[in-house]
Amino acid sequence: MVIYFLLSLTVLYGLFLSRVTIVRNINTSSNELYISRNNITLFFWFLILLGLAAFKGIEVGVDYPMYYGFFLHKSYIGALEPGISFIYDLAIRYNNFFVFSIGVYFLFLFFIFAGIKKHLPNYIIGLFFFLLTYTYLNSYNQLRQMIAVAIVFCFVNYLITNNKLDRMKYVIVILIALLFHNSAIFAILFFFMPKKRFSSKLVIPLFLMTIVIYFLPGIKNIVGDLIINFSGIYAEKYTTNLSFFFEVNKEKGLLQLIPVIIQMIIVSISLYFPKDDKELNISYKLYHFSTNLVIVNLWLYSLAGIEAIDRIQIYFSCFNLFYYPILIHLLLNSKKKRHGQTFVILISCFWILYFVLRLYINIAGVVPYRLFIS
Image (cartoon, rainbow, N blue to C red; front, top):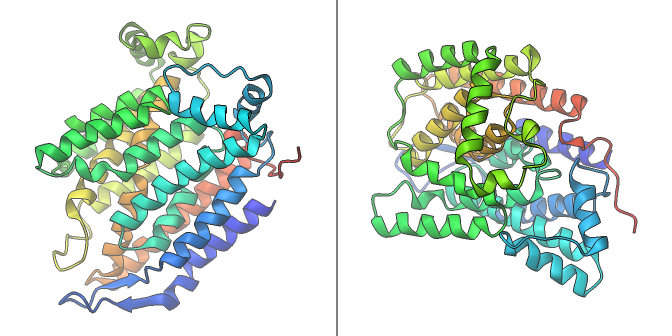
C-alpha cells in the first residue's frame, strides 16, 4: 500500500500545503498568484514516481505480466514498434528486467514532466491531476501506448502555432511516438482540431446528444464495424479478438456515466467562468486547444464500450493535465475570489472521489501494490 500512502500525501500537499508557497509573480504587471515552481520539487516527484512504477511487482497492472513474459521467453515481436524492441534487446543483453522497466517508465515520466514544466504555471497542480486523473496509474497497464501519449502531450505546442515548420515538427513527433505504439497514428486527428475554443451553443447540445447515444448499443456496433473496415494494420493486430477490441464490450453503464456528466458540467461552466485574463502568464492557445480536446474526449463517451474508441480517448483525456491546472490557475486569480475558490474546491473534491472510486473498482489492476522480487 506504499503507493496509496504516497498518493494521499501528494493530494494533501496539492490541496493544503501548497497554499503556503503561493507567491505573487513580480515578473508581470498584475498581482498574479501562482504556486511556486521549483525544479527540485519536480525532480523529487519524478524519482519517486519512477521508482514506484519501475520496481512494482509484475502482477501490478493487467498487462504487466505479459511484458515480463516477453522478457523471460525473449519472444517480443515488435517490428512496427522498434523503440520498445530496442529497450527489450537491452534488457535481454544484460539479463535484467529492470533495464526494461526503468527504461520505459523513464521515457513516459520524462515527457509528461517536460510537458508540465514547459506549459503549466503550476507544477504542483499539474502533478496533482497527473495522479488524480489516473494518467499515471494507467501506465501500469497500457505501458507502450502511454509512452506514445506522453510524447504527443509534451510537444503539442508545435500544433497550436501558425508556423508551418512547427506543424511539420509535429509530424515528426507522431513518427517518434509510433516507435512505441501504433495507436499514435490517431494523433493526426489533432490537426483537425480548431484552435478557437468551441462555443457553448455547440458544446451543451453535443453533451446532451452524448448522454442519449451512450445508451444506444446499436449505434456503437455500427461504429465498431466501420472501424474494422478502415483501421487496416491496426485492426490486424487484434484479428484474434475483434469482438472485444472493436465492438461493444457492454461493461459501461450508469455508474461510469455519472462522473462523465459531472465533467461535462464542469467544462460547460468553464466556458462562461472564469473569463480569460490577458494579464496572467498563461498560454491561452494551449488552454483553449486543450479545452476542445477535453470536450471531444467527453463526446467520445457516446461510443464508450468500443475498445478501439477507448484507446483513442487516452490521447484526448491526457489533456486534462493542461486543462484543469490552467483552469484552476485562472480561478485562483479570478476577481470573483469566492466563486473561484468554491469552483476549485468542487473540482478537487470530484476528482478525489473519482480517483478513490477507480481504486476501489481496481481499474487497470493496480491494487494491491507490491514491489518486484526477482
